[in-house]
Length: 482
Image (tube, rainbow, N blue to C red; front, top):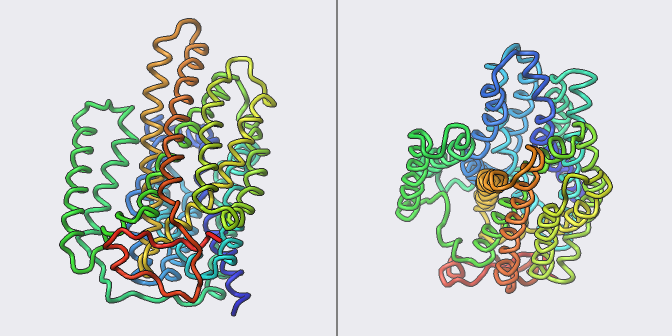
């Protein structure tokens, strides 16, 4: 039985792998898709946006379904749906079918992502075993960062874009079979109820804010549709808080936000996502438009970074056990902030090798930052891990989209203020955007040092903290600290 848990870890890691790979592999195949279907740029954008909308808007729903119906059921359902949708995308005869398949992929991902992390918390209650498991999971999760862009470019150039989706099928089938035979049946928390009003309102609010952030630049931030989407998001968020405060079986116990570990971790991860999502998005444009790298050369620039990140991620949980979550994660975020700001000092004459010091510094920081996931999710009482994981991922998705939008505005303002050629003006704006992104990430360093300072080691035999601990703002301990 004990060995089965490690096979279950492999299944969870494979589920994370294919969802992350799908996120990273699509971008370089978009020109090939556009040529084959003869579609407009707007339709092309929806091939990316359809996945993000479904994924981000349903993360809380997916997390709560895992808590109520069982994490194993939710994870398996997500894997099956994601695999079927990947095949449908790979054989899509037109853009309409492809966009519909991408929506289904997003729904599957919204079930896999929160359930996968919560399963690790459930399968490995011992702090040291969990540290090893989180390290393996984080190391595997770093691989798509490098593999995705390179594989996407190679498949599009030498095979066809269809294969960027079809490669998910064998991995997905294997992960489904492995999950079915290795994962114990998760406890179903029937008494918690489904809180259908909360599920619906949260999905509506997340759909509205995600749509506004994705489409705001193209449609205009002051356009009625975008302003209306923001208004709907605010109203839905207000309604959600009222529903949760009065519900007998709330989707999220609002008391958990009084926990320093949970709320501080959520905000810290959000600041990280703001800077990193924006930096990575515009870094790709800088490499190809500013430095005139080919797509393949731009993709290979990430390979050393991903390799080092894999090593750092595998070691990070044990480092956190030794030195504490507060020092480890705050230091990791500081390294990330420095690396993002460092990117702003690169100009027009930068070579492939010149980029590597900043990339490798980021790799160390990002790998060491991996334990934040389990720290945040383990901070809540049992039966709420799924929705806690969903909340964490909502923070990442929404903050990341905010980062792309706001750093994009900073880049545009910096470009407009500069003089010279179009490439020179773009680089000037890009540099300012990277500096701003680095500053935003740095804001999370003192926050995490404060929020995680009380996290201590938990003996697996100890009973979990009860509701009174939440009531009086006594942070629930995360199990990584030695």
